[in-house]
Amino acid sequence: MSGKFGFFLGCVAPLRYPGIEKATREVFKALNYELVELEGAGCCPAPGVIKSFDEPTWLALAARNLAIAEKKGVDIMTICNGCYGSLFDANHVLHEHPEKLKEVNEILKDIGLHYSGKTKVRHFAEVLHNEVGMERIQAAVKNKLDLNVAAHYGCHFIRPSKIKHLDDPERPVLLDELIEWTGAHSLPYKDKNMCCGAGGGVRSRNSSLALEFTAEKLKNIKAAGGMYIIDVCPFCHLQFDRSQKDVKGYDIPVIHLAQLYGLAFGLPRSDLGLEAHEVKVNL
Amino acid sequence: MSNIKEPDPVFTKAIIDAGGKTLDLCYQCGTCTASCPSGRRTGFRTRQLIRKAQLGLKDDILPTEDLWLCTTCYSCVERCPREVEITDIITIMRNMAVKKGYMADQHKKIGASMMKTATTVPLSPENSALREKMGLPAVPPMAISDPKALEDFRTIMRKTGFDKLIGGA
Image (cartoon, rainbow over the protein chains, first blue to last red):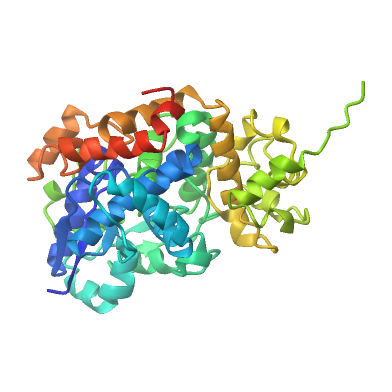
């Protein structure tokens, strides 16, 4: 056994793109990891909305998830930048501010939970890159993918770099390397680091503005010859996948890194849940 | 009638006390505005919003749509030469706006969904069927399928007053 993590599902992956969840389970099984269920976990909660509405609620709900993992004695692994943003940042706040941890525990007491701050929060892409590493990944690739793809990092994976320390916030390479290890080619393109437009409650409150962001990214990806968009966040994934019917002239399938790894590891396509995608993936 | 605006140091102090301690470090260089993907497409100007916060012009901030045009992408925070925690300051002001009752209906709906299922999005019958087809439980093993966990989740939201904040869901 290489190790184990508490698998934090989030909302968008299990409920809208269950193939992302399934592919993650199979990929980590192939890499000899145990993914422990975090039964009863709730929304992370979504940072762009819940934290914008009421930070104390955001912090308490995040602490509940952290406490569920702590009780099981596992660190958390997320498959979503939003979940990573919420859980990692909340954990950071609780470490920096003992008085907030105390307040949160007053609330958690009512539901029979306690958080002492032990849980670490990891993003699955960073686990693949920094822990599994190139050699083991390349050894697991059965199906070399000769594709030109556009990596989309999203906002809350690398940023804010001051607390995450994963990569250069302006010119990250982590996701590009993960893509290249499958044999695919990760293209440079204009404004690669730009947001998809969905975060911060903008998709729900001002969908036309969110769409303008997405349209710009699609334009730049198409200009660079991107055949697929590779993301590490189901919410960016949803934004790119569902927006192409509104932004005319694009037909660029969107694939979460877990699904790309599933393909590269030779999983049956039925394990990737591509049926849920609006832009059809023909691979 | 003069249109000179009166600064309100009490509002500024409230932002600082809520965690916006870097607010006063801003010296109006404009790197944030130049980095903002939202400001590229709208009239939203990050630098101006931070200046208004420094001056405590709460009526020019709390009711406005500008406050909600930030996608929290952190581009400005990464580049700010003074390390002003701009995204956090915007979050603090959004919290204040919501407390005053400025909240979009679409956002209230997300709050209501959290109260109902502990998730932000619903599970469609198609996706439930797809889950089963892939050998996953039809409903994921989260609070959404666990009555006690769901009640715990709601208890927290009631305790923090979130249920009332979103209009008594």
